[in-house]
Image (cartoon, rainbow, N blue to C red; front, top):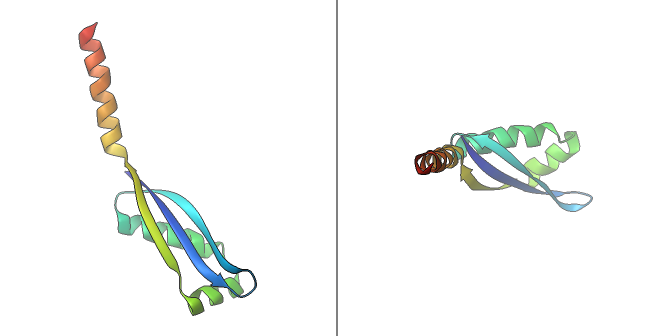
Length: 85
């Protein structure tokens, strides 16, 4: 699993630009965006959803790390330490 940081922004009628950032574990970028979007929209009330639909939703996603690659490197380091002893 990879860790993604997904940021959302939309124009609210009262406070201007609103948004949030969520960290999600997913196997792919589209899966992370879909999962984070569902969580983000669930937290909005009816008027906020209307504003989001009217002005659009800006989504930015960044892959923070690949979980499998980090685990593999940790395993290799521990194996090298055992060989030295």
